[in-house]
Image (cartoon, rainbow, N blue to C red; front, side, top):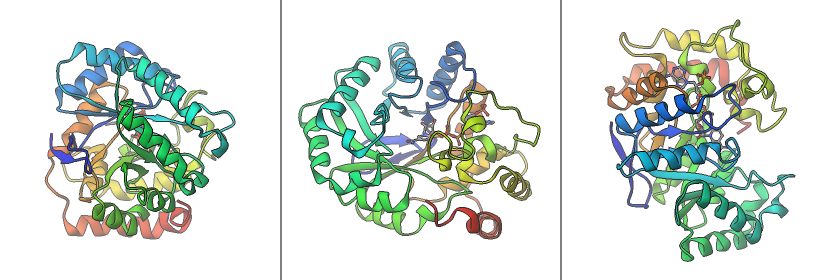
Length: 327
Ligand SMILES: NC(=O)c1ccc[n+]([C@@H]2O[C@H](COP(=O)([O-])OP(=O)(O)OC[C@H]3O[C@@H](n4cnc5c(N)ncnc54)[C@H](OP(=O)(O)O)[C@@H]3O)[C@@H](O)[C@H]2O)c1
């Protein structure tokens, strides 16, 4: 495993970390025993950072992580999120009272008296124009409810606006071979301000692992079935917002670039880690084998300039015209 600084937090986090959405829900059937095995495998592989949220299985993901922390002695940094329990999910709902309630519930689920990192969970864009909300977040830090806070965003513009607030320590954003736009202005600005970046959806919901085909079946409660067109939440969260057929074709082109002995998942993660603004990638993993496969990406040698250009070429030809300006 390799470790990178998480912004100004003082934490060095595993460059391949763990995304704990799937073990909570919205990805078809999951089995807690298997999820625990996946979490333990991550720690065995040197992972020391886990991303979760209160809404992932309504506390299920957070509670599994609390169990992991009881069963392991290693230092594990846990980032959770708040805001998505609001229904309807509106800017007006982001009040000090509501957030305090969400944070208390996460403290209970994670069985701790102080969270490591709370991220605003893709709030409406308007939130970034409400400095008073960031003062509220400062208050949670002062009160010892969380060590740090950050944001999870949908769009580059939200990320740029968020880092104007000096105590935003981290930005979580979709970045992968199908989503290149964050790497320009945003990465530069985040580096200047030493803001940590968590690259989410690094495998484009599994698409970039190369295992998905026309015949792949997704259960009714898997967002790859019910959210392909953004029916329930932002379309960009499912297959990175790329049309299924277009994605399958682009994956076949990427496959030709993958060196022998390297899995497509590892290649996809190593591609992201070529960008030094990234603190870590947080691939979701439901099974120990997936976690082991993903973690090995951290120790792969850098990709060649030629390979990086080839991935950029595939993006420019097939993906850019469809998604580049959307997020
Ligand atoms: N709004 C937000 O803040 C937000 C939104 C999305 C995600 N996230 C965070 O980002 C994390 C990662 O994103 P994601 O989970 O959406 O997508 P992802 O990491 O791109 O894809 C994860 C899925 O790919 C499959 N997979 C993983 N490793 C594999 C491997 N080595 N070989 C084959 N298949 C593999 C697994 O599903 P199957 O086995 O079922 O195929 C897994 O659930 C989440 O867990 C969450 O922590 C945050």
